[in-house]
Length: 337
Image (cartoon, rainbow, N blue to C red):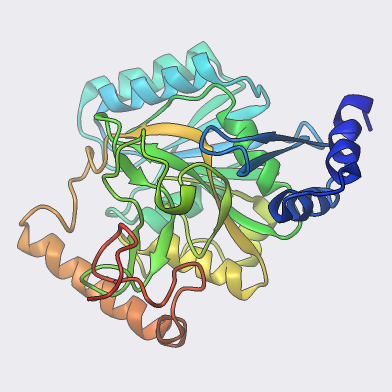
């Protein structure tokens, strides 16, 4: 172990009085070979552990896409320009695009980097789960990263921040901090039972990025029951072990269902604020919940009913990462009325 990193642990534990959080964090970090500990931007007593990446494993980035080439170009450009981890492949899963510009762009990116980028075709109707499963089937990586085409990488070390947790034996899925273009929170972890449908919802939703969050929770990595599939990393082995995404959830809740399957297998799911992306949410397809489209609303209702039935015991037990005294009608950790 490099002396500078080892000294972090010795210095902290050598003190007569060590904050409980530091002591716990250091001993947790000992499960990994090398690590660094530093304070977060929020409080000196909220700590960040950086685990060493133990191998230069291939990451397969799976991007479902239908037209909207401006979105896809912005995303792929951000990946290529900002990634400091170089061992990755990009697999675009084409699904019923109609514009000639789309296919011209596919040829352009394949020609530009044929060893890194490829396009595979899914011919069925839109089914996010089936599209992602096909992408994974055509991947070569030890790790899989599901990534929406309407996202944009912000932080240069984004892949490392996800991988340092995904490589751990006890971790299932790892999710990122996703921001709307106005820099309010779109995703900072998912709680089951939250929201009008009592299925699952995002905490800190639309909170300002400058806010530290409830008890500083926007400032440190932590366990959540689920993370969004808009940016989700997991090892290929665990993806297969959990059976991939359930294609019965064609549009909604497939990511939460997947995370619950990982939890059933004994893994914990992690959200980290140190991997940041913009999310221009549902730019390609439109939202099933926020837009008054009767067909989409009915589809969401069906999938929500399926989810509530499949996970009724877990929903009844409540989310272990969300205090039972908090309202399930709000995402801001407000107490029940």
